[in-house]
Length: 455
Image 1 (cartoon, one colour):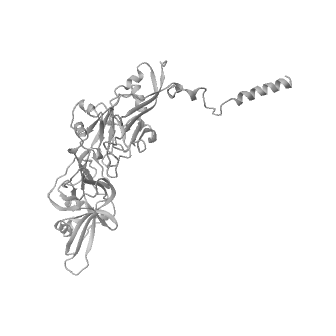
Image 2 (cartoon, one colour):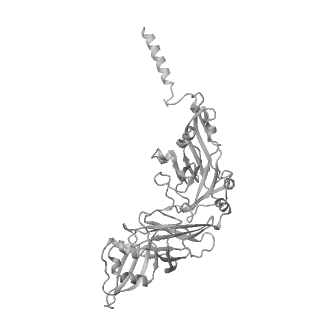
Image 3 (cartoon, rainbow, N blue to C red):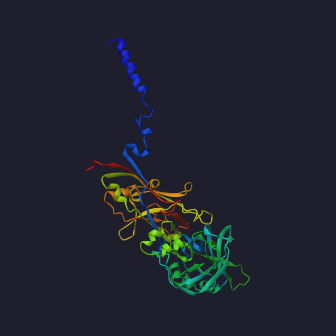
């Protein structure tokens, strides 16, 4: 080959490579094709969505240190009362405790530290009542928010007012009956150990259910820490044989290996709730679905859940197999019904789970098969005022006939598979637009690839 021919060949190769786009991953024409045409991808956002609100009678209340106490007249959800059942124990698991030969009680009080979280108007003065339990709290027992224990008919303490400061912390401080406290001081046989003590002193029922609430929005439910160092039952006493002796105190704790406590929650939708919410939670049959067309409601403490159903999912595979890339349920907060305020915030996240054939709750495969809950979603998007869930795995299994489409539940819970079952610690609530809500209509956006020749 002559030098001239070699030079021409080199120029031709150089010209070909110099014309190639810098993006080696690009495909000719993709930058001008509609999104739906890319690689045979189809995007559908017209699937029908039916939703309605369901009343939940109770959820499990877990035995941890954080408990809720108070009453609120919610302008949308009606009245909610949160009460506490708790035992108490000898601090540090001490044994053979004695208060001297002649201890005389000066005063006694219950102190519980407030953590700052609240639902409603904290300026409302509530009435706090304390009753002794006649029935022991049993460690390891699963207690539910609608469960009552036997208690004394007479109160050992009652206080109407605001929280107070104690050692620089905001606390609930309840003065309790001196006779009860005197019995504890002067009965050393019950102070041998905590098992003996709790057999004799079964605990307390603390409630604000007798509080008189006025206008919508009045009253508050607060989050308290029973395990805080300052929380407990304080007895203040002196030596009766030495009247001039310096007073002493002893703390009985709400924490420790013997601690058992749970919340009793009462939702009263008859008392001033939104009429549409009321008609859904007390409705029956298919009318519930229609009543949820405008709005659905997720209450605090697991009081309600939303039934979600996509009736025509199998239409995606009428004539061909499909591969689901994303299946996003986008639900929007209806701020006209429930505006965001410091008194009524929205849940930081929600969860979308599946229904079984008998209506029980099940995890979706997008929760089971991943630790990446960013893809599954559920977190509140404050910019767009919405929650987005991606249930692509669950939908693929439905289309492949590995799962049956019995519908879904939208619940006020953490989306993580390990914690979604828990509802008793959800203080916030939210109102969501239904399928006929013009401004806040939900969308089910499915991204998939068709395989028309698949056998």
